Amino acid sequence: MAKKERPIVLYPAYFDLGRSRADGRRVAKRWAVESPTAEEVVTAAKALGLEPQLDAEKAFPTSHWRHEGRVLVRADYFKTSVVQKVAERIKKARSG
Image (tube, rainbow, N blue to C red; front, side):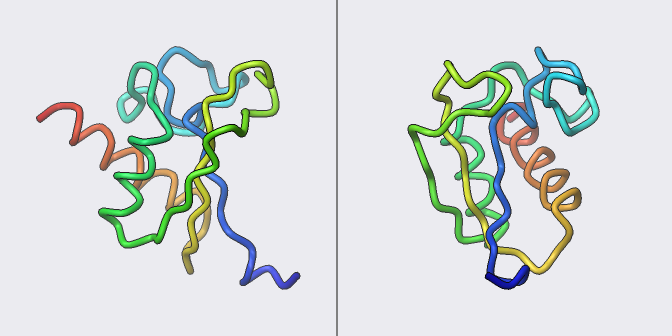
């Protein structure tokens, strides 16, 4: 499969304020939120036009016993910029 065809995988753990960077958080603490859900990630990705697909039963590899779900998106950007934009959108939605 070509790299362009592979989706970007987003786990709620990437945006979780309760996790350290070593535990899987990928955004700065100021953009992280308490216990984000996969549905919030889907909503944020949809607002950004990323065509999200929810895999509700999947788990983040380092906490495989917690089936929090994951979101697959298609984007022509680097994963880090997609994660940052989704984090900002979740934070705005939570704050009002």
